[in-house]
Amino acid sequence: MPSKKGYAAVVHSDPNVSSSSAASSDAEDYAPPRNSSFSAYDDPNNRLSGEGSPMMMSPWNQNSSPFTKSPWSNFDNAAAAPQCGLVGSLVREEGHIYSLAAKDDLLYTGSDSKNIRVWKNMEEFSAFKSNSGLVKAIIISGDKIFTGHQDGKIRVWRINPKTPNVHKRVGTMPTFFDIFKASIRPRNYVEVKRKKTALWIKHTDAISCLSMDKEKGLLYSASWDRTFKVWKVDTNKCVESVKAHDDAVNSVVSTVDGVVYTGSADGTVKVWKREQKGKVVKHSLTQTLLSQESAVTALAVNDSGTVVYCGSSDGLVNFWEMEKQLSHGGVMKGHKLAVLCLEAAGSLVFSGSADKTICVWRREGAVHTCLSVLTGHTGPVKCLAVEEDKESAAAGGGDKKWVVYSGSLDKSVKVWSVSEMAPDLHQMALLQHRDGGDINWDSIPSVKY
Image (tube, rainbow, N blue to C red; front, side, top):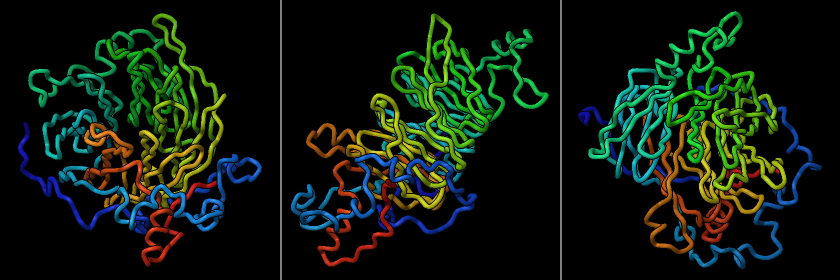
C-alpha cells in the first residue's frame, strides 16, 4: 500500500461549500458554446403536453396557493426541508480526476497521474498503477475492474479475495497474442485515416468511455478514433468494431434488450440494436436521435431504459422518452458552459459541467425540476458516480438518499448527500420568500419547453 505522504487535505468538510441556487459565474478556459442547429424543441407545435412554459412552471401562476398542496408545506422554514449538501472532500495533489466508479462503499478514482486509487469511508484504502496513458474510464464487474486509457488500451484488474486492498493486473485488451495473430492476415487491417491502416481489434486513439452488459458478459468501449468496440469479458477478445460516427465518440451506454446508445463530437446521438447468433455479435443502426452543431459530450439512461439523457457542449441536456418509440421529451437548462458528465439514479439525474457546478434534477412524469445546484469545485466537473445511501435504504420510509461522487479538474473528489425528497429550487425560493427573503428567479435552472 502506497505511502500517504504528500496529501494536502485528505478529508475535510468545508462549511463554506454547499448546495446553492446560483451557478458559478467564473468562466473556464473552454471554447464558447455554439448555437445548436437542433430546433425541434423551439417549435411550439412540437411541445409535449407535459412540458410547461416558464409562466406555467412558475409557482406564481398556480390556481391556488403554492403552500396549500405542496408536500413541503409542513416545514416551518426552508432550512427544515430535506437537503442536498457536501459530506466531504478527497484531495490528493497528483493530477486531474478524469474517471470514477463506485461499488459497495468503495470508490475508484482515475487521474492523469496513471494511478487508480481506491477509497473507503473517505480514506485511502488502496492504490495500483498502470504504466500507460491517463485513466479515462473505470468500470467494475464482480471482482474485476476494467480501466480505459489514453493509449487506447483496456487494462483488466482483479481484486485479491483474501486481501481485498490488493489489485493485480490480469490482462490487457486486446491481448498481445490476439494482436500478433490478427496482424498476420491482411484482411484484419482497416483504414483509420487517409492512407493509414490499423488492426480492427485495436483502438487507434484514446478510450473515452466504457459500458457493460453484465447479463451478456459484453464490454463496450468508445474512442476518439470514431468507433466503439465490443469485447467478451470472459476471453478479453474483441468481437466487433463499429465505425459509428464522423468524429470522436465521447460516450457509449449499453441498456436493456441489446440497445446501445452512442454520442459523438459530430453532434449526433445514435441508437444501435445488438443481434447475436452464436459467437457472432452484430450491431445495426436503428435511429439517430439528435443531429446538431454542438458536440455531444455525455449520455445517461435511467434504470428502466425508458429515458435517455444527452449532455452537450452548449450546456444543455436533451432527453428522450420511450413509449412505442423514443420521442424528444424536452431540454433541461442549468449550465453556463459545456455539460461534461451525466448520471441517472432513481428519479434523479445529475449533470456536471465545465462551469464547475452539478445540477440535481428530479423527474416527475415528463417534467424535470432542478432540486439543487451543487457548488464548491474550483475546476470543471469531469466525472460523476452515484450509489444508494445504505443508511436511508435500511431505515425505509419515503426519503430515499443517494451518495454522489464528483471528480474535477481541480484535482479533488467531493462527496455529496442528495435526498430525492428535497424541495426543488422554486419551492425553496417560495419558502425563503415566506420567511422574508428575496427571490432571484434568474438564478434558478429551468426545463425548456
